[in-house]
Image 1 (spheres, rainbow, N blue to C red):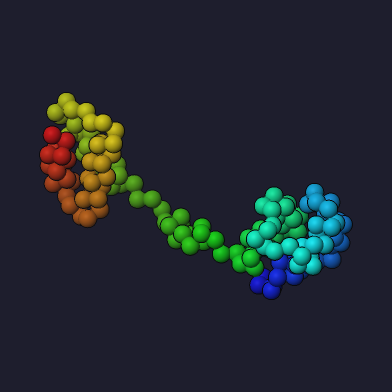
Image 2: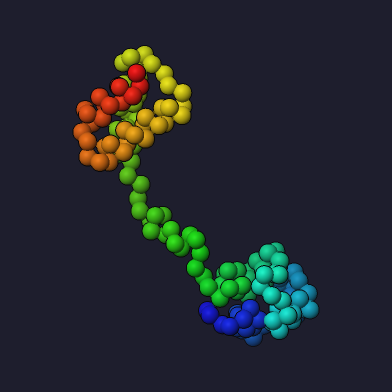
Length: 142
């Protein structure tokens, strides 16, 4: 929906709904709805609470009502969210760090242990064999 103004987008989203009906549904006033419809309100002056209530009342995304665009930061990162997490290398990295510490009776502070585990994970991701990563972890933990 790329109507030119906030008022035009709101009017289009209202369909045949009357301003008074929208005002009741959005817990607002008819004057507020009329101001929005007549473009007497600049988008940068819109109150967030009103925006969400009015958008919900007409069944439109608040960002789309305000800007005319549905694109969001989340959309830009949607590719990341859709990919499954690859746990196998993480499991092996945790096991290697635990094994190296246990065999020497060592403990590491949580931040150091996390750092060594992350490095082990990265090495496994690069294709290094688990035995070689274990050697690295032993040296890093010493």
